[in-house]
Image: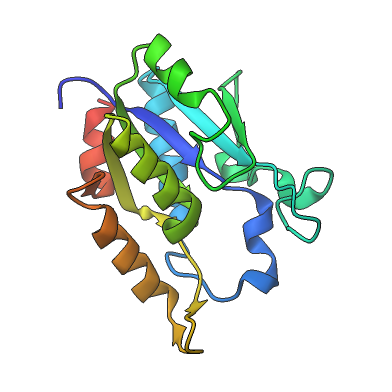
Length: 184
């Protein structure tokens, strides 16, 4: 890759640690994201953080409570921009697309949570809007999901299927080593 993509960190907030979310996969994802942030910061490459400000009364992501805060190991520093959203996609009602285009960001590396929800929605929108999108599979995670028939799907399976849904049509799934090489 000739230019470092813009790093977009989606919804890595304390809310996701609430036990009500249930079991998750990729327990080391925050450390992987922290490695990406360090590489991007050292390269002075562009970074955006996305924060979900839920309007749902019982949401762990609701503003005014600790769950709305970024997890400390991946929190913005030094004026890194924060995109505030109230839906599952960072592109809905936020002006994010306009800002990326205005600043010349055409390649995006998107990481964060939940793989099959906000991350996938943001990736699909970005791909549909014509951005070149990459996702580091180990820099995102999800939780167990119960389907309409009452079957519980393990987080690992939900995550793998979501990555498969995104790969090729909306994004390219890459590993950490590949992504880190872009910031050198």
